[in-house]
Length: 443
Image 1: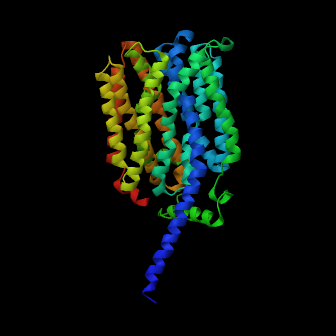
Image 2: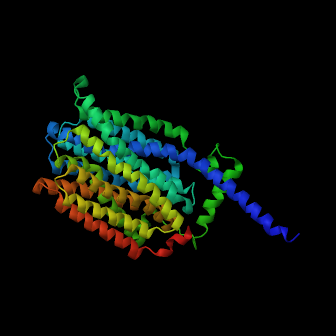
Image 3: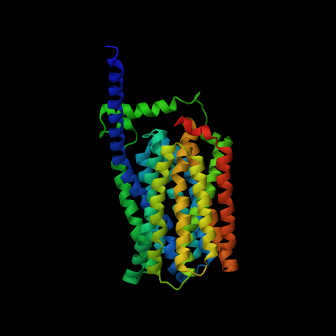
């Protein structure tokens, strides 16, 4: 009889593992496609000015510096309201928070069609950032309610590919709207762009209120056994911390680990938003290609990024290693930017260089957020995620404004890119030097 006991135990473990895998597949099918759609819409409304500015600069007399300032103003609003939004989400739930955020940013994005002056343009970009604040860290916090850390790398990777899918479709979608609807009802093509890409966010925001479930315990689409399994996995992770820490949200400002991770995010996002906001203009400066052709060429970097994000996140999960995966991705991206500087006169070579830069830096983000999810204690997670995301968003404010100022002053972007690349190298080294290797053991 005793000989049968190990086999019986193995059978029980195998059965439990089978139930667990089936449960998390169900959770993923329910949550990730919808959150993926929300993020696609978020990124479209965030980056569509990269294409709109190809026409807006003439109609509104925008200079490169003003455009860069407007692109960066989004992140100032994002920074100021991100932590309060995440703290509110923890109190009232993701369903109400995500719905509210999407409704507000959808209306703000559509309202961009009414801008008539550079000042109005900058102000509305600030409001768009303020309304969208909290969405990204809010989703990351929400996912920690449903997935233990060992599953988060791949899940976050799948979710974050929405950013590059948005970039992939933004080119042909935006340029087609701008060219085909130009002069319809007396509106410019860029005005139609903001309307057509803003209103869908309003519709999905309404749907989010009815579709999302705040916690596993509230999920009518899970059985009682499945609810208990997910909640048990999450509770087990929380219990691995040595002691509970009662702290206010403001205490995260005194945690060096949070500030260092915030700088790592800042460095990576500084690189990524050069791609998002300046890639169309960089491509246009290498040739006399029209808006539609640039839209098609801009698809290649994002298509490559979908592959690298998915592969790199899964590879990081399998190896249970995060630090080097982040650092290598960001360092490879700097090599891509060096190639951009080295090939100023060729659209094809510039596109290939931008593809390397985009595919590499985007692969760093799922790995980065998997580090953050286990680096912070549960009591600091909501505010910590928001602060790290806020500090990172400053990279999105800094690099577009820097590139715009440098380009308007010198006619080239080289000096600005060198500064961005230096930050990316420092961010990579900071991750390796300061964040302990043992951090993944909690996973």
